[in-house]
Figure 1: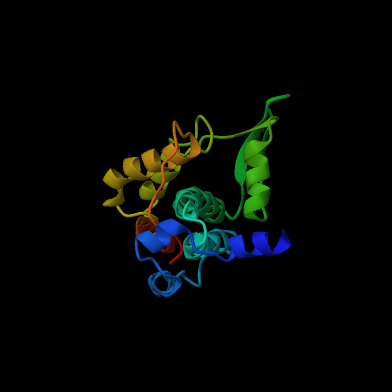
Figure 2: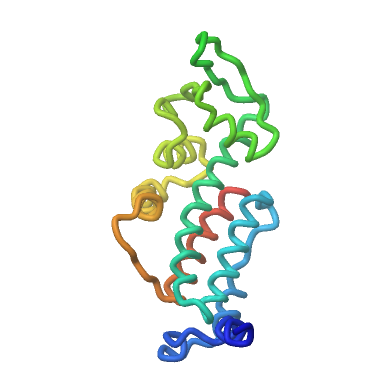
Length: 197
């Protein structure tokens, strides 16, 4: 039984054989995707996991879809981290219990995420953004307003938001080919790299 499980683990997915996908080709394409040295560790780790999942599609074809989905979620993570870093003196949060406003200085992305998900706190509006919380659409618009993302992205923001929402709120199952996942990952990495120049 143990040998059978091990053999199954190291056997290529039959769809990869059918489409002539091999680990060397996957590795070469993934090697062309360069993560900026300026990326925060949390973001870089997410993208490295996406690259590994793309490589391992040789064994589990569905890993390509998971990798692409995670790369869209990594955009949101990167934008949140960029927001946190943009305000080194802190961001104002209002307590829901007594309505006091307090400036918080999150020391890490995970600390910032904990503040954002704390049911007793609400982030205060920054300029005209984040009135309903830190949503992807606001993150994109805020980033454009601060010249973090260039104006060209303005039209593409809805596409990224729609793709991310399809991942976060699926209405069915989609299977993406490894080559499509790698292409999507490459585009998302270019966008994320541009956030941390």
